[in-house]
Length: 89
Image (cartoon, rainbow, N blue to C red):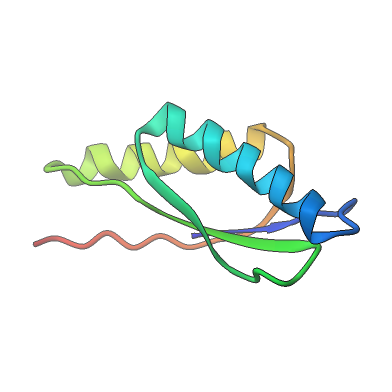
């Protein structure tokens, strides 16, 4: 999960535009399932959750790290928190 701060947002419409752009870029580059999962009614914060599936823990961990880095490099919003959980089945 990634929590963002959107400094210049003054409306939910503006927030949705930024979050949709972030989600689309990440989804296209990582073939991951990504969605806004929290803080839906807060203008200047957003939470997105994502899922990456694989059979090699190190590969999945590396992809998650790259996803976090790309989200930051987009510079569409400030990352204020990240959370990662890898589940082995």
